[in-house]
Amino acid sequence: GSANLAETDELIGAEPYVLQNVRDLETARRFLQTIERFKTWAGWHGHTAEGNPSGGNKFRGLYNIAIKSLGAAMKRHPEVRLDYVIDYGERMSAPGYYFMNSPGNDLESIAGQVASGANMIFFVTGNGSITNFPFVPTIKIVTTTERYNLLRRDMDVNAGAYLDGTPMDELGRKMFDLTLRVASGERSVGEKAGHSQVSIWRDWSFTGPQDLEAILRVEPPSGKPLPVRPEQPPRPFTFQALETREGYRSDQIGLILPTSLCSAQVAHLIAEHLNRQDLGRERGISRFIALPHTEGCGASSGSSEEIYTRTLVGHLIHPMVACALLLEHGCEKTHNDFMAQVLDRYGIERERYGWASVQLDGGIEAVTYKAEDWFRQAIDTMTPPRPVEVSLQHLRLGITATGQVTDRVAEGLAHLTRYIVGAGGSVVVPENAPFLRSSLYVRTVLAEEKVYPTLAYGESLREPGLHIMETPTDHTMETLTGLGATGVEVMFAHIVGHPVQSHRMVPLLQGTTDEATRQRYEEDLDLVVTGSSLTPELWAVQVLEKILQVASRVYTPRLYQSGNMSFQLTRGLLGISM
Image (cartoon, rainbow, N blue to C red; front, side, top):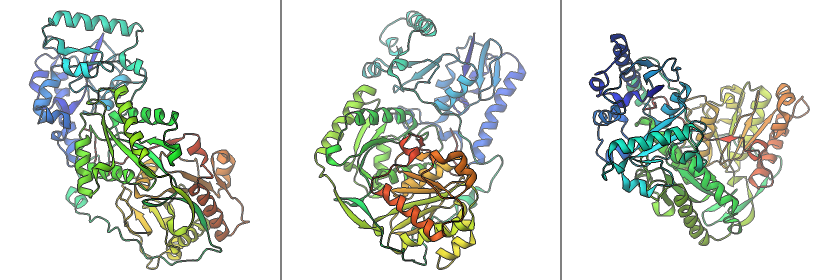
């Protein structure tokens, strides 16, 4: 058979132990070259392997990468020879013991091991990680009896029994027998739980040395809106908002916000559980939503962590969120205590929110009921919102586009922008929106004809008006995720080519004026106008009418209704997996 040890940065400092027993000189050299290549790659982005230890690691004494690596390397027994060194996801072509290049991010390394041919995962966890892969069984081995008893519904093996007096040979034999049974079809604990997580090694920005000081010196946006040439719409427009204690809102939802990728799927399960019960409907809660993502652990700190926290906070304080609970896994970098300190820095009362932990609250079932209890108590204190007709002053809209933007579309979007901003409302446009490169849009909308970011990626609106949000990448879903955090309550995208996935929380309308797009994707689009029958002004009115239907909760965008949606945080220019 074959075995596969991964996580390159978690072997830095343990090289002598790993190479005590190796097949040949070439294998040893390749291992050391892989380590050095990882260090160099991290350095291009301003990081070292010292960024790897998680919050749970540090809390329990693994306070630097060398100490952590010495423990991680022990997954290769001294009598077992290192036979091969392979790259991420490279197939294991012969029996033997392999080292696979990967980041220390658990889920990303497991995805690579599965791609290399692994058909069983042994996952050793001190805190009680609930990780499972969709189609390869994961046997979770927890290191203390106390933690096993807390999470016995989610763990497979109590390695702490050794500390309690069980001989190692007996414990090893029981685990080997369990492995054979699971390999023969018996379901592991994770398979019975019915949840899983997958994350492939995320892309990175740089493939060589960079001027990092220049990148870090860039001044943050001011938060002040751009000066706009206002325009009165052809008639007064209103929509039916919900009047709450905090102001007018287009909707009211309950949010379960996972603080890391490892609690993301559990957050989704909790949201489904609450939705099945119609919890909060009589108090104006339309639905519960979770925002599964890939961040919060196994990634670098610095600017990418700032982007992450800013974007999560933006969703937490979003106008549509009536009540929210933060859900930690329990051993991530950005655990609940970390997030509580972030809220303190933002001047947000942490008591407004619920807090729950998959690990510390006793596993998936126990934390689900804890979350339900908290939401029930929070909803009991809420006053049902009152529907009222309001003007465009209370509309917060995100606008973007894909593909080529014609002058007709640019002019139509210009009128749409001016109608809303002129009435006192807010429009947020991502920096990568193609119509911002249209001189027609710029000179029609802007009083000074200067385009520059006014909001950082994922930064919440503080003042109404027209804002441009920074976009470190061109990834559509990363762009929409950042837009959602600004506080917009509806998004509109003009589509040329295929439609895009919707944001999980904020409805995305998709329309086109392109005939080829209409012919192929009309059933997925919300608004189709082709030909030259409509002027840009009339097209802008049609788009605005559809937007107000969504803001009034009388129309749900097609792809949003079908569940074709996602949520993907950017890591910016310097973020990498660790």
